[in-house]
Image (cartoon, rainbow, N blue to C red; front, side, top):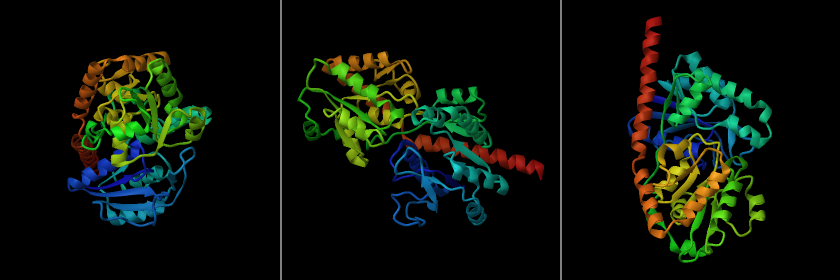
Amino acid sequence: MRLALVTETFPPEVNGVSMTLGRLVSGLAERGHEVQVVRPIQPSDRTESHWEDRGFSELIVPGVPLPGYNGLRMGMPEAYRLLKNWNEFGPDLVHVATEGPLGMAALWISHVLRIPVTSTYHTNFHQYTGHYRIGLIRDFILVFLRITHNECGCTLAPTREMVAALRAVGFKNVGVLSRGVDTVLFSPERRDEGLRRAWGVEPDGRVFLYVGRVASEKNIELAIDAFRQASAGTGGAVMVVVGDGPERTRLEEAHPDIVFAGMRKGEDLARHYASGDVFLFPSITETYGNVVAEALSSGLAVVTYDYAAGREWIENGVNGFVAPFDCESSFRNQAMNACSLESDTMSGIRVRARETALQLGWDRVVGDFERSLKTVKRKYDALFASTV
């Protein structure tokens, strides 16, 4: 196929949506599909140009800063530019990955040109509203998302739980597209004792790790609180926060004993994961949570809530720990359970975490994505033929 994928974020931006879309695009290109990525120019771009050396092309449009997300930009609704380009490029299908103004323009132009459209559901924007003082428009955002996605041939969400939740609020044609993890990159073999010593960890001490955006919607204060309760009286425990965001300065000043490692990428990020012991992830706004799969792949004892990736892949007490959704006391208790494990028991959980992750290869996910796109294309072609 010739596919146009429209998104607000794409590598080298560092976030779960960017990483997922990068994997899907490169996977489709490797399977022989011609892929064009339509995205806004980002601060990481040196020039506004098309890059043809990565197996796909790019159409880069102007962007404006995305409120609350420093470093990211939202694409402008370049409808005329899309119309002109797609008349020449001739995509067989358009995939709208994010629901901003650029995505809306892409949806409209697709309908004008009679091109089938698919979408993915990556972010619970309506659940973020309370964290950014715009809670009054939560219902409006949900209605907007529902109308937008229902204009597409299908919407792909990362878990069965999310599919059921979207259907319950009126989303149509919803299916599952899971997430993969790079088990070669994220591996226990990258554990670095020198890095642990630099963090001030005693030989038998345990590292509590958080990886992700340092922002209010990630509930990091609960992770810190759980670490303090779980490690009280044990000695030698350290907490490390990997990532950046609007809450970093405040949290760093409030908790000078915690290691804030900042943004890490690639093998350096994988080394930080593997050098931890217990992964704390108390966010309640995830559609999936790629970091959970990365932590499992790195052989960590994951403590998270029983939803999203936690519900999909973690069996409580077997390969990690899950607490009832949004129950803070249970989350703290599960962190204490992880901290109190004997070394042999902890090792068993970490081995089983790694074994779980080995089932989550990206090739299977790309294949599922490819089949979903082809199914929508066939249905659209049959419908169009019947109306001619």
